[in-house]
Length: 539
Image (cartoon, rainbow, N blue to C red):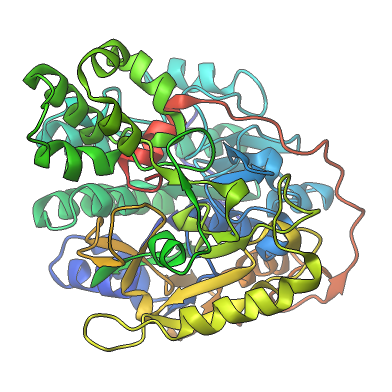
C-alpha cells in the first residue's frame, strides 16, 4: 500500500448527499463534526441551490456536468421508453463529466462513489462508481475493484444484508463501515495515482434520514464517521482548494399529496388491475390486507404479504419479486382474486390523458398521440389540456386551506436542451418543499407523509483554500463543474448552465467537441431497484 502522504491535490471535492445547514449546523454546534466545523471557519460557506427535481439521480449528473436535465437527459431514478422503464445509469447521462473535460486538458482525476457513474466512461484517471451502480461494478480502469478489495481487505457499495433482515444497531454499524471504506479507498487511490483532481462522495448522510429520521444517535454516528473521513482525507491529500458540496437538502414533510388520485378524480388518469402503468404493492399491506375480514387469507399468507411490503416490494417488479421471495404460490393459492386485483391497481398509462409516472420525477406527463405509443391527447389540444391541468393543480389547497404547490410550471420554463421531450410536461413544485408527492393510488388526495423526511431544494457549499476568504456565499448546483474547471484554468463549456463560484478566477467559455455516446444501456438489476424501494424512492 502506498504512503498515505501525497504531494497534494490541486482540488478536492467532497460530496455529502442531502446535507444542508439546518442538518449540519446543530451537529457542528454539538461537537459531532469538528473537522467540518474547522473547515467552515476558514471557508466561504453558504446555501447551494439544487435543481428541479432535487433528487440524487438527476442532481449529481447536473452537478458533475454543469448542465440541466434537459441537456444531460436524466430527470429521475427511472428513464422511460414509451411506457416502459428502467433504472438510470451513466449511459443515460448525455454529457461529459467534469473529470472527462479535465482529462481532455491533460489533468488526471480520482473519482470515488459519485452516484450515476456506472458504467464508467474512459478518461485519464480512476473511477469507482457509487450509488445506483450494481454491487461490485466495473471500474475504470478495469481491475480497480479487485485492487481495492486486495489492498483494503474488502470493499462494498452497499450493506451486506438487506434492511429488513438487519437490526438497527447493525444497520448503523454498516453505515459507518461503508463510510470508512469510501475514505480509505479514496486516500489509497490518491496516494497511488497522484492525481490533480479528486472527488469522493458519501451517501449515508442522506440514507440515515430515510431510514432513521428521528434517531438522533444514528444520525450522529453517521455524521461523526463522515467527519472523521473528511478530516483524514484533507490531512492526507493536502489540497490547494477544497469544495464540500451537496446535491440537495433534507427536512421534515407536512403531508402527502397523491397526484394520481387527484388526476383520477378529474377524469385524467385511468386505472387498471392488469398490465400497464406502475402499481403500488405496499398499499395492499398497509390498508386492504389488514382491513380484510371476509374470506380472509390464512395468517401465513397475510404475514408473507406484510413482509413483502415491509422490505419495500414495489409493483414495478411485482411478479419477479414475488417469485424471488417465494411468495408467488402463497398469493395465488390463498389470497382472494379481488384482493390480488386491488393490490395491483395502477395507473393505465395508455388509457390516461395525464398521469404522474414516478413521484421523484415531480411532475405530470400527458399521453400525447404521436409521442407516446398509445397517446390519446391530440397534439392540437396539447396546450389547452396542459393549461387546464396547470390551472387545476395551482388551485389545489391543503386541508388547512393553504396552497399545495409553490409553482406549477410548463416544463420549458424549467428545462432546455435536446432532452426536453423526456421531461414531465408539467412540473409540480410543493409549497416550501413541505409536501411529499406520491404517485400511488390509495383512495384520498391527502394523508400523513409516507416518508417523514424528504428532500429540500437548498443544499450546502463550502470552499476553503489559501486564496479563499471566509465569508458567506450562495451558489447553484450548475456552478460546481464550471468552478472545478476554472480552478485548473480550463474554460467553461458554452453549453453549461452555470458560471464559476466567486472563489476562483473565471477563465471564460469555449465550445467542446460533440459528446459521443451510443445511448442508454439497460440497468436491469433487481437489487438496485430493491434498494431504491427500501428508501421510499420507488413506491
